[in-house]
Image 1: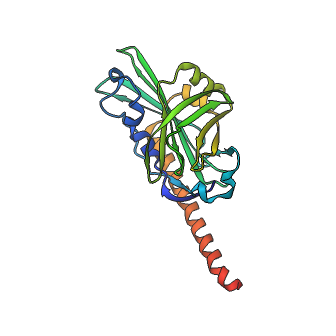
Image 2: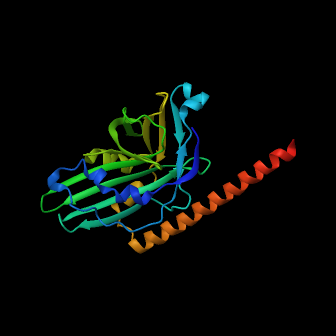
Image 3: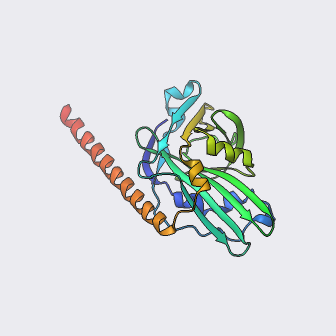
Length: 249
């Protein structure tokens, strides 16, 4: 499975489209408007080479080991309050890349509380690459224990959103203590692909204070700048290689 940096990997959209996550929340607990999240430049996203064109796709299950985006120091927690419903909404999120540094997946865990209605709802959402079968949905587990099923909600040119609603406290506890979050999907040839996401630092961020919006905005600007720099370096390298090819003949 290969990925390239070509389309915008809008992590801001992952959070801005709160209606997708809130679709699984009981109507009485849903805020009428998404919680305000700090505006942020969109990092760069992967597009996926169709699996059907890859000979290895005909083989057995594939595990894609991910690592945290180097420009991000840790998981990030952002909180806001919906003034209409009184619902407090926090999400803890991080972007992940391949061993080659290519963006692959973003994860966000929402914790929504409405003190007046004494309701608490948790939702896990992922932004995944294109080229996956939607109907089977997704499954995720922590350290291989107790898989939880989810569904794809919507796809855009930069990737597909998948979510699991109504997550109970035991799943959150497992995420806090776990080592690896395994997200399993199927590609176009029905081959199972599992993204192995490191959970280091998640529990500390989830239970800790929310990041200051100004600090978050500066972090996102730095991340965007770094990704644009890498993309430009890759473009120049590719142009150099293409220019050298005819000369070699």
